[in-house]
Length: 228
Image 1 (spheres, rainbow, N blue to C red):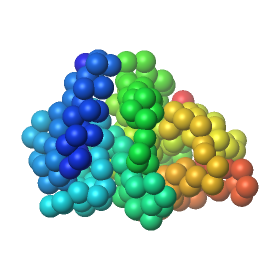
Image 2: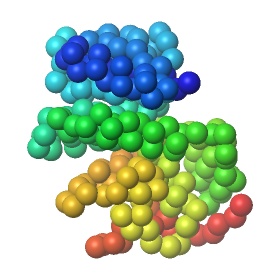
Image 3: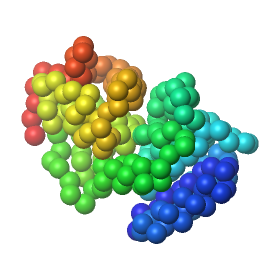
């Protein structure tokens, strides 16, 4: 049974979501502010965190920063409708996905299931080596020059998808459907934000040249050589 941690100071909404998700076979725990959420995550186990941004004591963005110092657990952020600034900051910090309030609980459930499917290691794919980059699907870990790349769940999925199709451009539409598990909305920049994070992490290992932006289309991993 997958464990979901809901972090939201709206206790009525949080309890309603806990009942709804629980009825769908998920084990749900709750926290009412960011500090409690971080503490609960680090003390216990969670397969995924659903976290609001606007909270007392420690807001969702600060809590996400703290979580990313210790864990790559998938995080879905809840944002105010039309609040593009907080949404983009959340993605920059390392959120895997976001959902704007108000939302239908069925949409949240669909997002949760999509993320959990992407992180399921029961049916693994072959490891891929491209130049000095190694991507291991079984452990969901990536290294470059034998140094670990600290990736979020979504960043790992994007990198693996690009590596599977190395040398070929992949559209943002396909990246969203395969790596995020949902269709890309008009004017949505979530894929661009995730790819910007991925490029920055590759650059820290002098490997940003591997990732190429195909203007007006999407992205491509461009190796010097590829082997399996």
